[in-house]
Length: 252
Length: 243
Image (cartoon, rainbow over all chains, first blue to last red; front, side, top):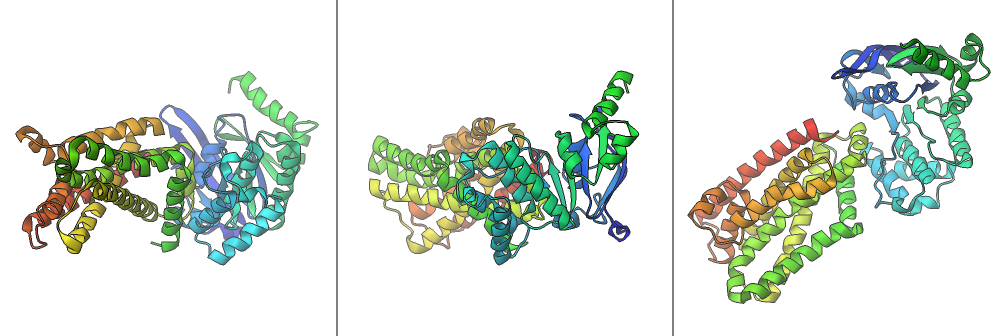
């Protein structure tokens, strides 16, 4: 099956993930268009990271399935790995290597030709204004610098689909703006981007559409504008608080 | 299996050793100090009989380095990150076997140089050294397997260090340079280092020719043990150790 023919980068069908007595993802259905910047929002423990981990093959679904670029996560995970880039929530980098060495390593692990790695590395480092710092060992990096490099490592091989899990946590406003510009740039390049964030204004500013999940279920879906109109809210944060807050009050 | 990915990981692992002072200490200073201490404590005549066992011990010590390295990488989310790339388990494990075997050879070389300084004069000639080289490689692969088993069980790098001694100590006391009695010999028959040390003793102390069947039996048993242990290590780590 190839869902990319239908213009969808990601298709999630009746997805369930249970951990003993905990249901992390509860019958999730979602379609994300190719080239779309999709904001995946939800309170802590809502099931965002589990969903992303299923889509990138780290976690096996209990029931249902998902298709990434047309490939089934249950059967074709090796094909999926060729097409995705994942920026994890916690910066996962080799601290004894320099920024450039980390990028080079993951370029190699993604099977890029040597000359392309250097070319792409120079390009990305210039875009994020990170050339000078990239020559230092990661051990001495600030939190913001770690985040930047964490994201660049995910994108070194120019993936078709990027999962950015809280990419701007701990960044100062200037660095965050720079990353926003960069995420916008990815969208202009027609990449499918799945962004999870706790900064709702970030999702509002960047996302084409937003999905809010809670207790593993999709509870709202639409463009930020549509959601604000539907819930008579001034901004997306208000929508988020109304929806997730109501569920707490109603004991759902 | 693509060479590019394996080589990139080997390069990274070797940089880790060179750039991390703790690993560098374990790698260079520990075997050197150990050899010199034994040499000074026992004198050159007795030390001569212990030297082949010390070569084996240097390989066994890799267990701790492997266990720490895997646990560290797991704690920092690096194993998950590598797992998301198209790198196969074979390329990943292959890189660890190569890099740690290289480290083992390096450690054995340090022990050998220190031993020669103290006065160890091995028999066996160039062909003996070649066979010893093969024994060291096989024992190193086995140590990587034990390291993987340790990393699977350990929840953190600190625990991994302690747990690795479960595999290091019996091999050290019953399978290297400590003289054996009837009871400990029975235990030693189940330890890979015993076969490596026995063959190294035959080569370096007795100057046994390459046609000596006992050397090949030792190498054969050691190879089988190493294959079984590395496979157990890889399977356990793949199933329970990555998360």
